[in-house]
Image 1 (tube, rainbow, N blue to C red):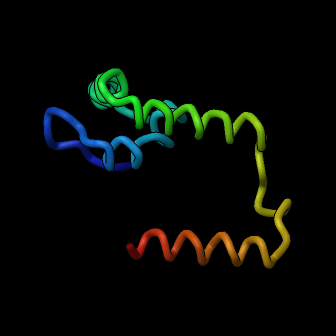
Image 2 (image 1 turned 30 degrees about the vertical axis):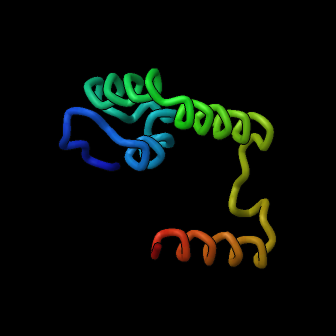
Length: 84
């Protein structure tokens, strides 16, 4: 989980916190700061809505539900994203 050090968060931090926010794993303080950012940022609010819609439409996907090729593709995509 991303540790927040500054009083206000920026969009990059908000994007990184979306999963923790949706899973309810942010501290009360970080949750308030995240929600304050959302109130002031229509782009991050739209991003959160997109993630919620994606979760709703796809349901739960387990690793065994994916073909080995799909697992490999997603793993490679994630590694590429993290290296940027």
